[in-house]
Amino acid sequence: HIDRGKIRTSLGILGPIYTWIIIYLLPALIFYISLLYKKLKRTTIKIKLELLSTYILAVLIGLITGYKADFLWIILMGIIIFYIDRFLLRNFFFIFSILIILLVFATTLVRGGIPLKQAFNFLIYRTFYLSTAGTVAAWNIFPSGVTLDNYAYMIIGLLGSKISSLLLDSKLSAINTNLSVLISYKAYPNVSKVLSGEVNLTLTIFGEAILIWSKYFHFVHAVLYGSFVGIVIAYFYNNILKGNLLKSSLSSIVVLQIIISTITGNSLAFLSLYFIIYLTLTYITLSFIDKKVKRKLKLYKFLTAS
Image (cartoon, rainbow, N blue to C red; front, top):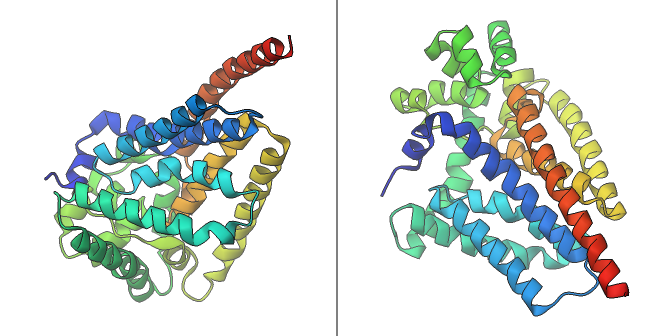
């Protein structure tokens, strides 16, 4: 059994490439393939099996990296597209149950084959207790929000960890340029694990709002972030209705990042340099694939028409 935190910190220069592939490229490709499947007027058993094998492969890729949630991020937007034009609540409990079962099995695997009951109990503990630790710490330690110095550090942090570590002292950079690391450093008892990157408390979007705006004005964050989320989801849904594979797939990644950022408390990531780079790389890759797909679809329509 290998500690997941040590896997994360041992990637070195491959870390950004891994993040781009797992959190941006693969989810975009899964969404693209799923939307393309929905657009097909006729589907054969072969096409259905290929789609199923693609999802299975995506889940395996997420699992073998040692992160129990990665497979979920990879396939989540693809699953949503199959139900977005239906009454979503009708299928909510079915989808939720399947995801919980998958998470329990994934937890069993990444935690060295522990019993399923123990894996389920760990998920409950992680979801309802550990995930609130960062938010509670933010409320108690920073009731008036972070200092002006921290705001400056946060702006530098938007350039990415590598660049910020060059501009600042490495320890200072690690702690102050990331709000989750800052609250982990203040609240977690083992400081060395925080500084090494093995431990990072979940902050949530509410905890982030407290740190930025204080517990008295956190609602400002809700208004600003909520407006951004509304615009993105409207753009996403409109492109799905238009059947635009490229724009829908690209915007699905932004929606996915909204989900992740809401849970982890990292909405500032949308202003960061690395987000722009990751999104640009995903756009270039999807554009290349989209051109190939459109050519094949035109050929397919020509052959079936003749």
